[in-house]
Length: 546
Ligand code: NAP
Image 1 (cartoon, helix red, strand yellow):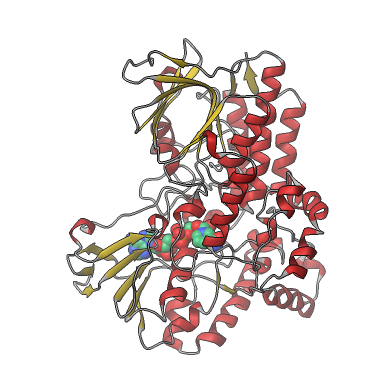
Image 2 (spheres, helix red, strand yellow; image 1 turned 90 degrees about the vertical axis):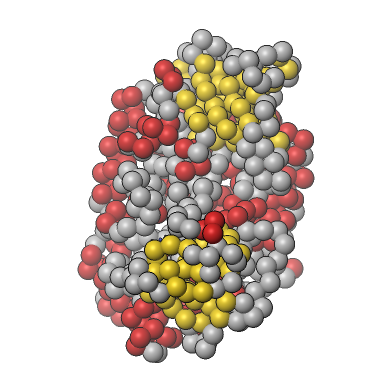
């Protein structure tokens, strides 16, 4: 099966074609591990990444203040204790430079770089029904003929940039996910930040003290939780490393792949006991309030209303000024029904005299002009730097930006423009031998500790390919019935939650025209894993192989 040769011509005649057993798109958390696993089982694999280095999300998102809000010691890979314990974090929620260094450490320890083509963008991938192989073409004019194609493109890697007139702006304009490697000099500058999701919040709190004047364009306020970020020295590192076996046993089975989980039922506790749980979670300074207080917050409007009011009160205590409270505290959706950001003095940034909120809820941004940002009321906000913290075409955008053609020439972009469907987020009917990670209809599309979920998907894909090789099978594709069944189960699970009622990137509602479907599977990381394992244990039931 292993073929290293370069053939003389590509199937479209335009590209010299190399031959591989597998091509992995992406060299981030999933791509690095997928490359490693497939190479370990003897496949001839190439990974391709547009970046000049490894890291994926943690390569591109080098904006000021970018940092984890999963605990560092649970964001690591758990397949090798040696790899795990060979790295020590400096704090609980480290920043992007340290995270990028960690992924470089992983690439070096596993000797991955020799099989990664950096600075290369995959332009198309077409399935050839005669050969039952994929032809992958890149912007370097290369073609790769491969049996398996594994998309490890990340769920938040296609930046969403939407304002007319951006090209005319005479100052500097950056999307946070395409941040330059050289530091930006904010000193004394008039800066606009558009967006106050997890990214915008990190930017605002980081640059508020540096800029001359900051205008934060806020459309939808966020519930926020103050982060506590203790430093880790040798003792703390030793303590968490000693938990390796516990973490390995626990993380894959919790609801979101974090160390903590939902342990108590709202109905079983008295009001003071509930309050104590909420305070305890709050004081952890992590996502615990969201991911381990009461699961009922996702299903029960009354429970959600009480927890939302608990958070609002905490925010009011810090903001004090009623006008700021009106602009920065959510009132029309419930806590936890979209991504909850952690923050560090974000709310206090608005007490500074050089920081101003521009509410664009009823007065939307019209366009970018040569000098700044114009809102619908005709006001032009003149600035020197515009930071677009406007998010992503999540889950689907990374793949629809590639011309992917499956059986009968069907286009994934067209298919997903009508209806976003996958089979367990692992494969798509009509696209044989294409495997996916971090795409819709799996927890890895949003609602999980990413490394927990991505490891599981990578391992499932690896095992599936190993199974096929053992049985001398060449092609795998989920049946339409299997996919229909998964989509129905996904929708039923999703529609029982309040998450499906709140507009956000979780539903694709941030992208005009995107079909509305909850991207993440909401049945829980542990349950999802069991379902995937069950498929594998039953000879990949529902996945047709030949
Ligand atoms: P996001 O959550 O989608 O937020 C985008 C922001 O831009 C929202 O405030 C949105 O307002 C605003 N926006 C978009 N278009 C706009 C327009 N035309 N006018 C005004 N405002 C506009 O994106 P993100 O903050 O980049 O975060 C995406 C995800 O990345 C997060 O949810 C999280 O999962 C991940 N992330 C993780 C970390 C971490 O782990 N530490 C850090 C950053 C990001 P609306 O809400 O009104 O649409």
